Image (cartoon, helix red, strand yellow):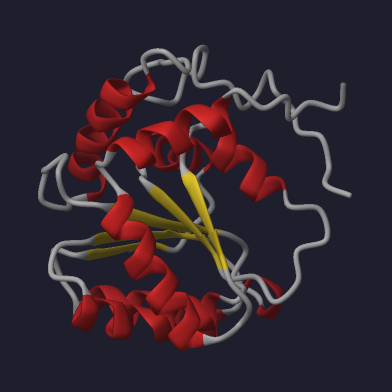
Length: 194
């Protein structure tokens, strides 16, 4: 049973933290503009055509930041053009893992290891794909937030190879009509407690 979410706090048509507000009818163009603003904000090359993968979460075992960090080098071998934004704070060993991914892939990976609610909203609005590498996810709020913002979810168990290959599959779909249909299908769901 998934939770309902706070649809007033997480509402792309009224979100004060994002560059361009949008709804299901304006999502495709607005997400591209939000992506460019996000890329500029975090210091990645600005290019709306580069698929952008996000990871947002508390950096502890449950959320699998170590799985995400281990999947990044594999993904970089499989996909030429991709950017990854990592946001979270928690255990120092996991913070170091994310920062080392940024050091290894400058200009492609950006790790923000602090609590930043505004940036979380901006990432949801600008990312194409949300990677959820949780070992267990009792209520799935992060997935609901991703759906509300038309950011497609990639959920795989804690298996590094599976995460890398699933992200590779997702990245191939970004920018296609099928992706645009997924964005619309995500955004029309009622994800509230109602």
